[in-house]
Length: 159
Length: 159
DNA sequence: CTTGATGTAACTGGAACTGTTACATCAGGG
DNA sequence: CCCTGATGTAACAGTTCCAGTTACATCAAG
Image 1: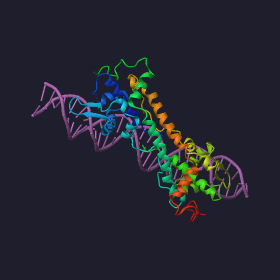
Image 2: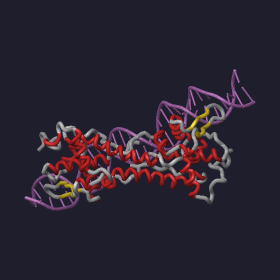
Image 3: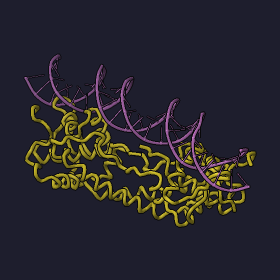
Image 4: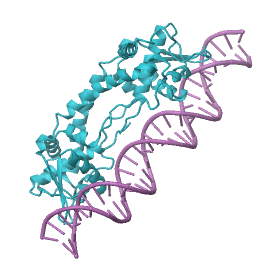
């Protein structure tokens, strides 16, 4: 199936926050971030909550509240983010338990789990090789035309 | 999220068919296979259809119809099976397109896709290292107590 | 021709995700 | 000390996907 988009949303926010910070502003609201991701602020707050619990971002409450990166973008890997927002396995086992009276049904699950775990470990290692700073660099070099001078979000009327 | 169970079901069927074949019977019906997986025959026919299109199993129609492995179990990898039954990416991109007026929203998708592809490639390589024969061996050695002498499915009253 | 299984469409129930509204909670600033 | 603006979270709606199920046309061996 098409997996969920939580990892994508979380990476997007962090990359956006890295860019915003580079432009001098380091405190952003969920609403501002939602503009770039094109989603609802509550969705972002849920996402940022996971990132906060993982120690990747910090939150400030009260008036003038907002979010800030808690680490340098080049120390945050996609694996960190994935762990923070999505704990589900990549490959699902049987929905209903297989027939225990059949030797295959009785013993296949540990065997499958072992194979799946190797694949997931491999995927995680790959995710660990890319950082938020990497994605930011790739993102900006991909379209040098428009790029970095502009405001990072559509804050035309806002700010 | 928890991914679907198609890969698991497909591997299960093929491992079960490998065992059945080793016991002398090489033509099985979707109903018999469904007993071991503990699911509905139609679900298995859908699954086996994909495996057939991928050349992993053969089907015989008409009276006395059934399914048979088209390759040796030690030449069928989990990657072959995964490709046959599930073409979805492991990591989903944005559900709604991100804001194109934001430099991040405009350029992040190719950057993400590249990172995701590396992770998927790594996972696929791992899946390619395990064969149906491997899973069969692991499955049977996991519970040597009951194991191989019995009938592979619960054909107690049936047969 | 009979028979038994495949191939597939159509539908159901349930689960998961995203989006949305609503509201309690919090802390900074006047 | 209250006012303000944002967070944190519950609750719900709309979609989409998945597995299960029924139904039936199709096929080929005997």
